[in-house]
Length: 412
Image: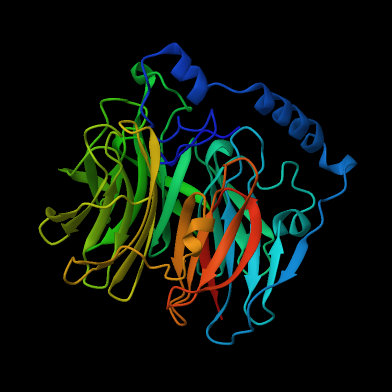
């Protein structure tokens, strides 16, 4: 089973630990939300038997489907990282080829048949930098580095409880929770950012930040890191760490809100940071920070599970857990990054959002403006990817791996 790193999500029983979901006081609630179910143990045992010796088992074949129309521009395709359930070693990688309109599932195993445990346990982040594809595999404690064209493994960087990645110059920067997954706040450790030389794939320095750091972004010569404090329930962290890139030292921490998560920069140079709140009296919100002054300049009352910025539009979808009403609240929003107005609360216009059980990821094509929304379903079985046109009308859908999350485009 997977420990949930997206705390808004009401996941399967063991899923909510890694990102700081609230811990209820009752023993039965802990068992319900955090303990491995019998089904999960059986599934884990089966996976272990299957994956312990790749040389004795055939590689699972790639599955292909045709969806959509062929498109030819500077973007040739995209990769989709499926997280997989924690403890099941089920993270997988899919690829969509625009030149052939072909969706291919589980391509990592075929490209790397000699890697014993395939991609690993809990795929957390995925980005392309230069000609390399970087996959942050959370509970396998590693960053997989692949050739962006062939998906062949180049190497890996070992980082404990690694979370998210960004780049600047010759370096990759990766957040780490530093210690193992744990609900015991007394054992929670200050997190850090690891700086990786992309030429050598060696960590040359680390910088301490706040508790359980998640996403990070570069702006105005500085690195901004959202500290969640996810293992400190109910005393979440509420700060954004600011790191000077020249010295690689933390210079300050900006107080924003509880349980921070996502970070993006827009083309005005502003930072957008999401807070998950505490799932009770403190609601989830989206905040704007001016990197010139390092001040919070605005807040918008929307929840954000995933967001992407295209042009002057910030697209956000959310599956936010509410303990007061004991339900998931699903939302879809578009914010104008110049005016900070919520210009839409319904970017899916044809009514097919009712078919999406748990919206989990969002990515907007920078040329066609097609919108890709992933659906994690029940967090245990395969999910779905839905392609919408810029008008919000569904074009096509395809089955993915378990818990489809991160999408990154491949350029010519």
